[in-house]
Length: 191
Image (tube, rainbow, N blue to C red; front, side, top):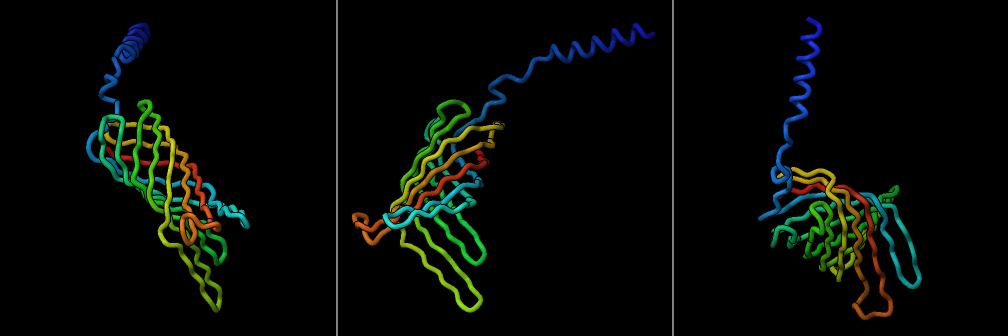
């Protein structure tokens, strides 16, 4: 009886090993049509000018929507905000771009876009509040990511993003402040 049980157990376990996994095509992401998603990250915001150099720890949120132009190329509208919160002070930068995302491999992608940026702060004390924000100025965004998890219509990726906004009265001014945002995060996308 024991010998029959062992033979049956080995036979069943061997049969499960012999089953073939689903074909690669069934596991691969199908990138076509509409693409959208969001992400979150931690990093830094840097205010950079001739007379200043301040770095703030920051958290960020982003969202994107676009259209697949080819199986490995998407036209994407991206919106990314980073903020530093400390006691009564909030410092932020927002960058919105229209750009391209290209998959160099089935999991590795790079992105770049041009658009606008705005930055500002909000301070609230006990008896007073102050707030200021820049006008929309030129900005850009670049990023790289690696898809850690893939299903046919959904991915989770680890990403590194960098963006800059240039602020001043006019783009050619001598006194120009550049706001840099950099973050390491996670993103979720649907195809």
